[in-house]
Length: 121
Length: 265
Image (tube, rainbow over the protein chains, first blue to last red):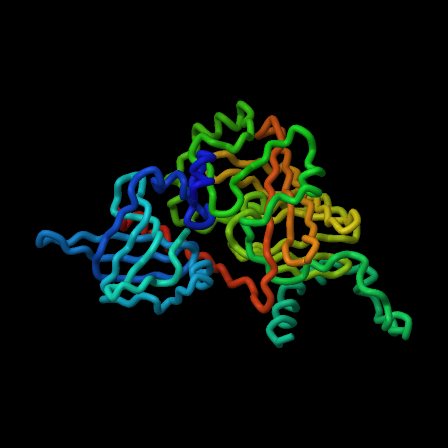
């Protein structure tokens, strides 16, 4: 990551797939961290997606976290059963440049503190 | 060897075998003589196996020495991407600059584009493994990324006049000592840097592959020239480490994924 930053490059979670990580996610700002309850977990290429319901101040918002390609995730210890609807989880990732509640996942941590698979980087 | 490998090999090679019709290797069976049974090992290195991207492997001096003068080194192999406006030293032509101005990254988020594969120019350097099956007549290279499958012919054949363009193109290879040199044409226009700069269907790609001394790292340079798009030449260095007992996984991209972008609003 330091090398990439030094070269003016951006570290893509994984592979500039169909869309450009560098164009859509902001790596020059602080990581976003949200805690909530899993509403949906898609484990399919080109990216997995975790949908999270976050409750704060009496209101609820929905966040989505885009993961690496699931084929890459499998080699990092993830499976389709890594997360289940109703799990409480904390997600950390790079924010979307357009300000939507959409992040590129760096790490996922269960309520008991265990990491889900190996985090990016 | 498990049953899975020959089965996979048969599935992958089936179209290749059809394409090699007329080659001596597809002719009538030749009785195996005692001399043939004790034939020496192949003269060329065997690249067969599963290879996972290795970002720590240093650039191979022998391969880098073969890169044509004036070629810019593209340092974005693996999970690194150039941000908007940075093409890693490639110099876009006026026509390419005009195309870049029209490029709208939001188009990438549409279902019809969510599973659009890049050509081998961008796909080979991605952080996904490859698997190689090698014969004397052709090499099959299966990329996990987008399930791309390359055929590299080693028998000197040329593409037919109406050979279609595709994301894998037509690849012809030959050995220069222990280095495999592959020339690829007939690529469909696709991204060079995943940020608006696309190569044309006339791009010419030259790749050189060789093994490390211990045979555990497969190293490659991928050079390309495309005068309609860039006024200079580019090269990437890519390395993969051998991992026994593994195979590439199916990619099977699901365009329904694009719906998540809309839902994120």
